[in-house]
Length: 96
Image (cartoon, rainbow, N blue to C red; front, side, top):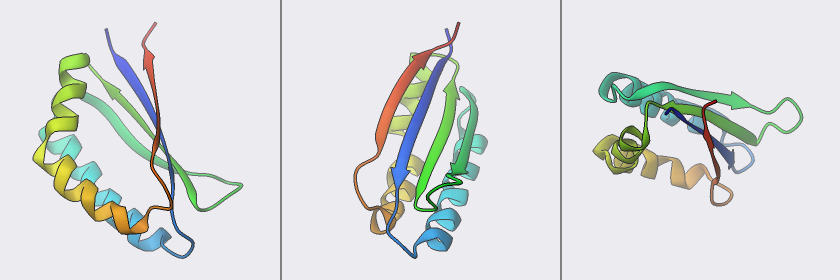
């Protein structure tokens, strides 16, 4: 069963360009190296330009676990840290 993830990310004021550039690297790595990832897309809030959500879907729990354990997620994800205003808020969903 597919698993959906919504990750809400709040970044520091003025870090949009840097954040989006680093995220583009991560998105490219995910789509190129994770066959169990169905989509991985960044969206910026229309109401608050420091709030983003990442909409993600994985084929199954194994694919989600592989994403979290991947070198690209760890290394490129760490580059997002200086842009962040706090910890991501994650919510998980089962496809119906």
